[in-house]
Length: 47
Image 1: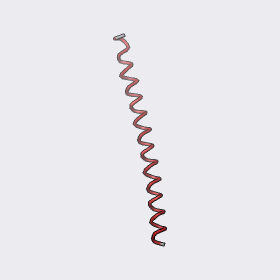
Image 2: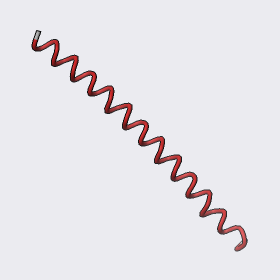
Image 3: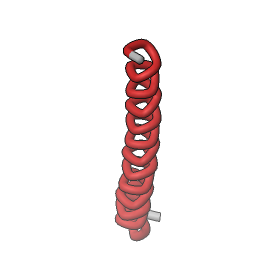
Image 4: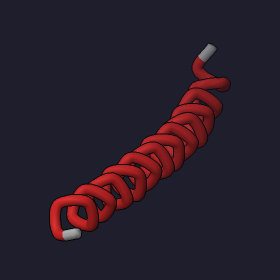
């Protein structure tokens, strides 16, 4: 079992990297959508 302990670290690193990428993409999507929503609200309130 001690021989496979390095695989746990490798899989943990891969999983962490994938999770980080998913979170970054989600935040990017949320930021873009909220920015578009705010721009639309500004246009409606000004004109």
